[in-house]
Length: 450
Image 1 (cartoon, one colour):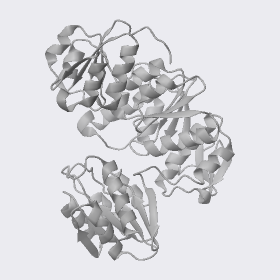
Image 2 (cartoon, one colour):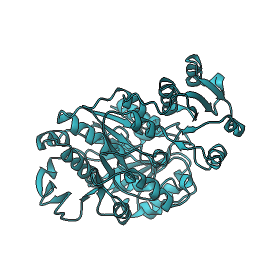
Image 3 (tube, rainbow, N blue to C red):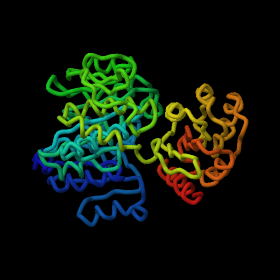
Image 4 (cartoon, rainbow, N blue to C red):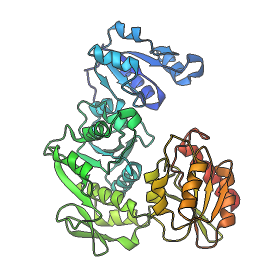
């Protein structure tokens, strides 16, 4: 860790806790800052805040009092989940107080370079693939960010011999100032988080922040099949490395004659890739690009791609029971993700879907339900999903109370050779705290069935 002096004796407010807020608070305290933590959760129900209090860090809990900003803070480190329309954040910006996220702090202290991955879909799979490829190639990678390990905590332990592979959300990227990855990746851009950003243009601007500090000495790996991502590339100063599943590229990564290729060099036959789904070829091409730019040998890349079957809750192969293959895609919290999951299989599918009702309909799913032989629905959106299933010509339906009951119900409609797929197309919050909880219940139900 770099022993930077820029925060010593500075008054800094950490706004919102969770993992990133705790890590930022402890780190800033070590760096000599006068840290105040403000979290909305009451102190009595807030073990994280209690732990910080025991370390001598000032803690204010239970509300976000705007008058707190009168105490002369020089910087705010904001939890990414707190929107910029929050009154506390608005007031801070009006006062001219800089607002950053914990990722910026991690970059400032890190001795290791970063490979940063963002996009609407595929971030976690791409991040994990790159990490595994670098590890297989003996490059000493560390993994961080939105994937579950806090960036500043990882950066504290990183050395010049490491590379930090970091998944980045648009929320995190809005709070960077100097963050500059040696390799940046934008997987794709679709409409998402518009309730947070307000418009697709602002969402794209947030994603484009990943390359705003890059120069010709860094690389931007970009999806060449999308106008939105290429628009980001057009404003970048970095060296552009395109990838495409549709075009034959002279430079960059593409598919050609049944092979994955990088800069026209054949890397691996597509038929030998273990990870299912056409959409995952985008993730694989971007990961291969990052690995090759990092000096990873083809043999190490091949080893990973021939064995890697998916990230937990993202089209994850769970098990086979009497000839039926079960896949957990609980992370499919929107329609596009479920469409991508459905297109991954050519065999008959029993689809488990439903969840939080955000007011939208699901008609976009209809063309992709032709291979679905039975639909098991649950949650608030069950009636809406059943309606589009009927319009798609599905004959078999069952509405159940929850995911646990959906698994045996799906098995009743299945035959050997079928795929039983949890891909809800909805957030989990009507019944489950997180999509991870929902996916774990599905996995447990499959094991009980077996």
